[in-house]
Image 1: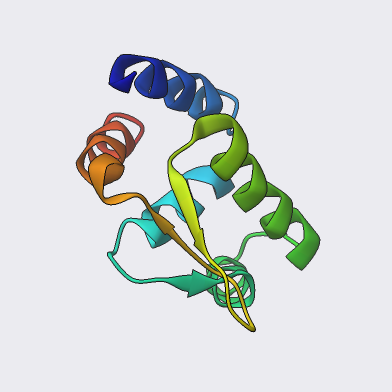
Image 2: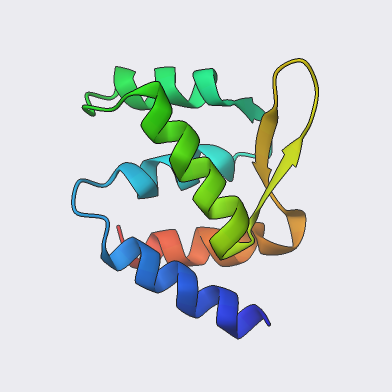
Length: 97
């Protein structure tokens, strides 16, 4: 399963022409839980041309297709990398730096 996740994540990042996916994953591996709006604001402040809906869609895809993101449901949903994948994601992000 872990090797399948690695393969999917590498393929997902290979298609990341602008670096936004890497940026979002970099935010999520910090060990904190972030709302969509927080992630959007961080990415936008770094100069990326993004919109809130795009960030929301990206988080949904990371959750459903990659299986590495978990959602904590509340008044404002919070997203984070599943603990078992944090080191894997960090190592893959280093490969793409």
